Image 1 (tube, rainbow, N blue to C red):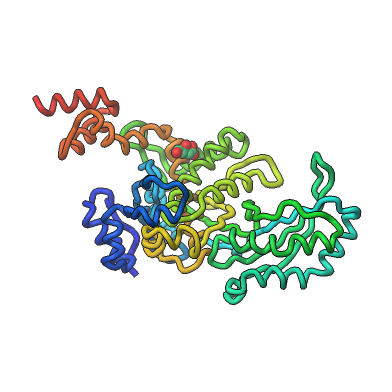
Image 2: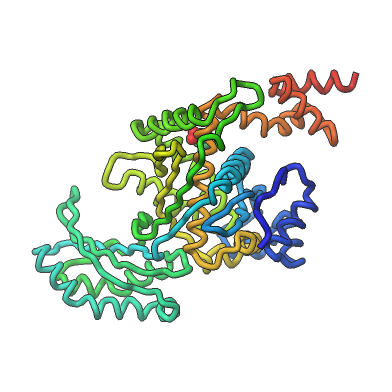
Length: 431
Ligand code: MEV
């Protein structure tokens, strides 16, 4: 297996980058052809995927390098327009390699389908009646998707809750469905629809809502990293003094403490995590809205809203980072199958199951988050963002061709990363 540790990948030309990824992932000429065309989706495909289509909106597809996950080298494709996301995730992944890489795991892919029953006279009696007929209800639900059952998935259990609302008490049943390698919305929605009426009869109630819940608490992925203090020390291009490892760990823990204590910071902290997770989701054709709603809801589940990652210092003074997050992702169905780029992205990632995809996403989210915290701990994020943004600024100032890189390098070196700074630099270069 080739290594995902790729030094200065960003400095290579497009052809060389593609060649490296092609060899790493065993991509064929057809897949490379699609990527080379920047994944251009033909109009017919786009029209089939959505409604009232008039074009396509594209995003750059980049590769986060250096990931080692459960001992396996991994290149992580990300479709996103913010350059620092891929840079930060790759940087941290490179450091984590030194201590053996990320350890990750994922729950079985179990989703929840909700059925709301109204006008139930006795909750306890209705609950008993539903659970008494569990076997029949599960059989009927499973008849909706025999293929899923054949692959070891399907409806596995029913749980019953009482929910107090402004319109009175209601019974809410949760159908637990193992979606295997699908995200699960179609199977779950079909199954709850198939049994809602029967359940209402059994409980002597009236069904109203029957739909998937995007709070996928049974389908979480977890990842963990350990970093030696000396591996994260450093200074940032002379904008601050050198920060030693132990000091860096303390600073990162200070930054994290605010996210733990304060919802305003926790929201931004989690945005950083979702920067990477959404980018992988878009690259691989996932329903990123479902992931977003599930992640933020989980961040507040049974407690006040808080960070989705945890940081601590172990006895040796190492920094330990952990993430736990619900990730309802799939390798079959939806855009995964219809988008040619999503298929290539999944091949590059080399994942064989939805659980493996969830693990890679969790690692990407954790890496990205630590990258942000490290920057914030030292000098704030603006400098790093602006450095990566320098080329765009050079173009905005009128630089063309080879001048773009030259102007970008100079304005970074001189600390003048503004359009005016770039214009002045360009003029000086041409004098
Ligand atoms: C920017 O897209 C994301 C960050 O703001 C996340 C964070 O503050 O932790 C850098």
